Length: 223
Length: 314
View 1 (cartoon, rainbow over the protein chains, first blue to last red):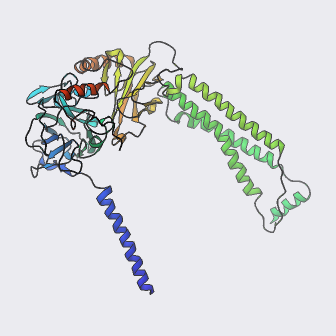
View 2 (tube, helix red, strand yellow):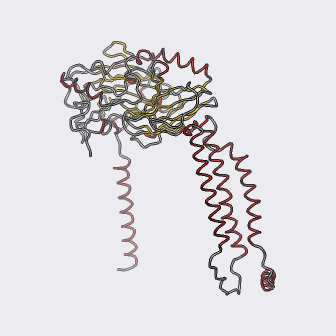
């Protein structure tokens, strides 16, 4: 084999290795759920965010995992993600349609609404400040952003015939609404559900509880 | 060449300099300067500061250990440097070094000095665990080192993925996400977990205690300075372990009482639905509620609180 051929072979092999590394990095290491962008949707300093919680998700390879979905403001379609981008210094009006059934809170403290405007949420139109998940089957998940001291329990419907196909469009549900303000500075604020809802995992803590796109997410605040 | 000739001349004439004395004197001066700098200049800035009794104790410990370690380290460096400078190979000197078969005086000195240092540190370490009531470390459910007095503020640290909450049994059992402590009063932390293993680490307070489910881990401290301190989880505990942080504050006793009273009133609605205060909480109590719900046909989180196959081992 001549020298030019050997050099060319070496370069091709090197390029192949680099391309393989880039492919693995992009498709596996950097892969994640999409980000729903609300930054261009602000009107009069407010944005409206709509989400839903499902007892399953039939759109992923783990269909028995409970999951959040976020409605895209651009397309109006439900997106299987928990990453959303919002502008700073903005009032975020959140609607969470809760299609999942109830699960007791491990720590009753998370039954209290905090960090919202007025420290209140509205469940099916009624103001609520505390939900007791031990005395009645009243909570399915929570929406909690510790960095903003935000904690909102999501009320559960009292009908066991839950929706079976995601994203849910019908079936027993509650409508939970609340508002909070984003901070003045940009940053990433993690949020999560505080119900141990990872069915099939030790203490209910694994699976969807520990996976972005299901019951853990990020609020990306853009200045 | 002139210096080498002089050395050769001295050796030939039996005027070998007293290397041991030279090294000792150099080391003595360097060690004295180093220890004074460590004690008086670096010492007050040693971690974790002096915000609490346990932190100040740890700061003192680190200073003492540094003062003990510095002369040892300096001896090694000085001896090595001296050897390189004085006993280096010289041009034209192909003679073998002298055969050495041990030196009893050096051996005894070395072993004695090492034994004195190690045994002294053993005694010092034991006293420093005992006197400052455990030095801020978790002592388990039955601590053997306790601070004197009976006016400890009880604070229960409850860890769960991925946040710490704090329960104050002397204030109606209220539970908050804020850790506020009074200056000048002994604090007893009762650390536990509701799920996996965490570790409560209040860095500037010099307090660190593992948070295990079903276990009460007690640690003591006494805040000595007003201000804020960081709290973080020191045990890898899952996805948002890195975000499991918060900021606590030390306030004057009056400010603390005011905060506690106001917070107790503000949280009254949720405090009354909390379980009775206990040193540990058994999550298996809650599945019983889940089972009752299942009997009613009301299920969630994929059907059950803890499905029958739990715990699932992947």
